[in-house]
Image (cartoon, rainbow, N blue to C red; front, side, top):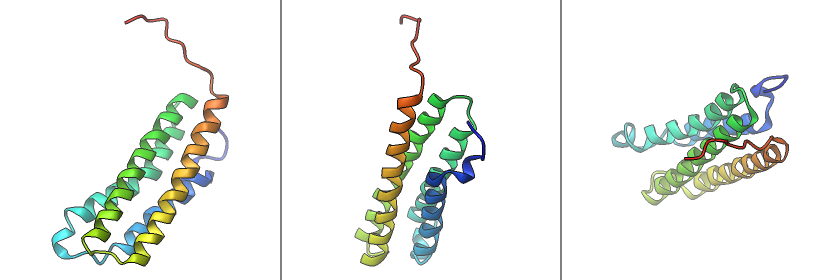
Amino acid sequence: MGPGGYQELDIWQRSRHLAVEVYARLHKLPAREQYALMDQLRRCAVSVPSNIAEGWGRASTQEFIRFLRIARGSLMELETQVILAHDFGYIDDQSQAHLLGLTDEVSRKLMATIKGLQKTAPVVVSTHNP
């Protein structure tokens, strides 16, 4: 997509930080949750920066935008799971607030990035009529 690589993207760095925080704050879940909620939380947390990186490696701005939207979907799933982990009593109020603050920050950055790219991306017009 451009010089420097995805590792220099602020949104990738922030989503990576979020994944690290999820791992750090949720490592104390009960053993019975290690292969259920914890696994799902980890997958979602890792999915966000992974999709940003994958989209960056695609051939077009439109593809990058598509993967940023997928990353946002994973982020919303992660947010829901953090709320549920709190509801189930697996994390305290402070950890929930911290993680939800990070998900909100990453969500806002993702949306701003998507909107910015949409302004500069060429409009793809299909000549194929279904």
